Image (cartoon, rainbow, N blue to C red; front, side, top):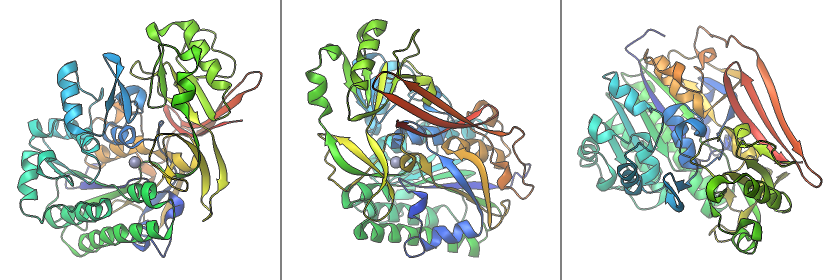
Length: 471
Ligand SMILES: [Zn+2]
């Protein structure tokens, strides 16, 4: 795609399910869809947690390669300690302690800097989430504007912030503010690539309830802010040069009960001495027999859905290898699990319910995510602009990992071939179709009392995870 005058903005609506786009709540997202190309089968990554997803947007890779394994992840050098990836200062301190970047693959921020192109991040997400989009922003003199104020902006971002009213405190207000900030400060003369990360409808889904009237009102406000961005884009000088990619990082399903995992684990002899957190269990010394014991214990629990085990010889009957869900990396637990969930419709018709571990502050009816339910793994992915087919849809598999390769391709920069994702060429006017065919892949395992399944889809070397479930 040789057209060096192009630039790209990636707008992420955190936690937006495709089936939450409706005329009465998201008219502007639907307008964008009508004027561009919609990827109808777009997928998140596992675990479907925001910072894991952010790292996949940044690097174009699945967690096995980018190394950000969970929102709360084991310290890479000391699994007795958990690292909260939501805090940007903690991530920077961790990198200094490790002498190693937190992301094991280069992100858009580094790749564009290397190519001498500018890059900006505007995010109302957590400071850790924002950090992962441009860990080296200071060194690259890139603009990072955080909705959490100047302390979490880069030097260049602080200069932008100084021209604006201070960011408001609430999640929804902050998402609207960040969208308006990019529109007024960047759209007239945008950098080669921008990521605009809106923390809605994720925050309202967690705290106002999934698909409640209060939550829909929130989504309406953020959609309106996106509508102002579209209006100014179409009416302004960047109409032809700027291409826009709209995505969500994961969906939400509804909390319908709790499992007291902490108490159950504490009372289980099989888990004695193990380090537990973030949906994973680290076995001391990685001993094979202990790994088997832990996996077998989890498979006997009726509140557990999937169980994945480090790739060892003779996996216990019923468990699947971590590689099935593309998280085989030493930074994650030897055994991973998801919580029991269903495809049953909630009160407003959205399919998907799940247990939640006791100790989280979310109430019954709240939205949750992190697992492999279709409602969590199905994402929004749409493209629009002068290079993009209008009123089109693609049924090829796609997902979060395809955003970075497509951004690089639009900018005519190298780097896409080293990523897990593919260039979404069928969305271009030339409609460049994938060379390989699309093949579904099913991973199944069963033991005496337990069976599970993971559904994936492949195009040549590119793999996406569709869903996982207990059978
Ligand atoms: Zn998220």
